[in-house]
Each structure stands twice: as structure tokens, then as C-alpha cells.
Image 1 (cartoon, rainbow, N blue to C red):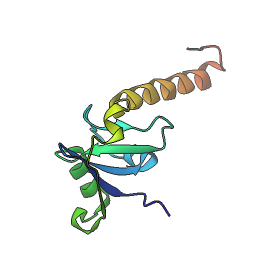
Image 2 (image 1 turned 90 degrees about the vertical axis):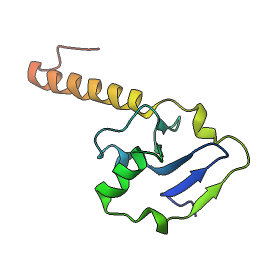
Image 3 (image 1 turned 45 degrees about the vertical axis):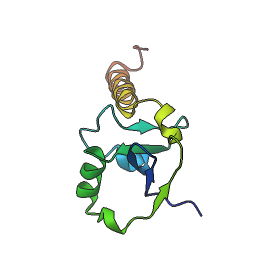
Image 4 (image 1 turned 180 degrees about the vertical axis):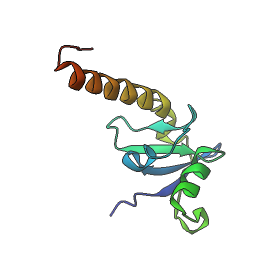
Length: 107
């Protein structure tokens, strides 16, 4: 069974792997965090974003399991989480406008 919240550690950095649906609830995620290509998993960089997440949900990060890698973590090649958040916000704005205008506005 895949753990939903786990530390991913490579030789140069670390990220907190979390469900994107929960990361979406945390304000201020930076461009140093990543989103999996399927959009389901966020990788929150450990210096700042992971702490925001842990604090937001009242989680003790020291109790979480870690996956230590010998090479670069695959998430380094994923799109920035912040780009996803911006696109999601634009989509939500378009949906609100469509509700107000009866669907007359498209992207």
C-alpha cells in the first residue's frame, strides 16, 4: 500500500509527498514544490512548504516515514506546483463567470 504522506529525500534536497487535494488547502505553496504529471500528488519542498502543510494539518513531521533515494528524485522534473495552482484559479474564475453569464464565456 502506498503511503499518502511521506518524506522523499535525495542527495540534495527533500520533499513531503502529499495528496494534491490536501495541498490545495494550504495557502502560499512556492514554486519550489512540484506536482505529479497526473495532478494527484504534490511534492512540497522541505525548507518552507512542507512546514506550512504540517502546521496547517497539525502533523508531526518527525513521525512520517522517509523514502531515501541515491539519485535525484523524479519530482525534480515535474511541473511547479504554483503553475498548477494558477491554472486551477483561472479555471475556477472562468466557471464562476460562466455561472453568472449563463455559459457565454469560454477560455
